[in-house]
Amino acid sequence: MFKEIEITQEIIKRMAYNSFMIKGWAVTLVVVTLLLRGTKVQAFIAFIPLLVFWFLDAYFLWQERMYRKLYDWVVQNRLNTDEYLFDMNAYRFRAEVQSPFRIMFSVTLGWFYGSIAALVILYCASLFLW
Image (cartoon, rainbow, N blue to C red; front, side, top):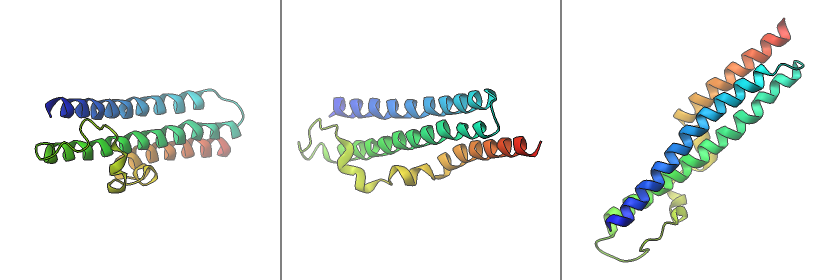
């Protein structure tokens, strides 16, 4: 039981780390895209990495939430049954977790990526006004 819990905790930790790294890469690539000045229309290219990393971050958060459900299930049921013993497939809990698209607009991800999107929009608008 303890090894199964430990493995699940490591998976959750890895998903959280991936989410953290994606946020860093998103900011970096959006800024680099904006610094590579081309035509005014090319500034809108900054939305491509923003949207891609926004979805990836939501996907890893979705995975993390499913593994948290798996962890809870193991803690509650492992002493009573050997069902799903060392089964690390967390997809059986996907009905209990919001979809990645819903998670994209959760409070934490919505504010983080939404504020970056707002700044990119302001930057693009300033290019067209001057």
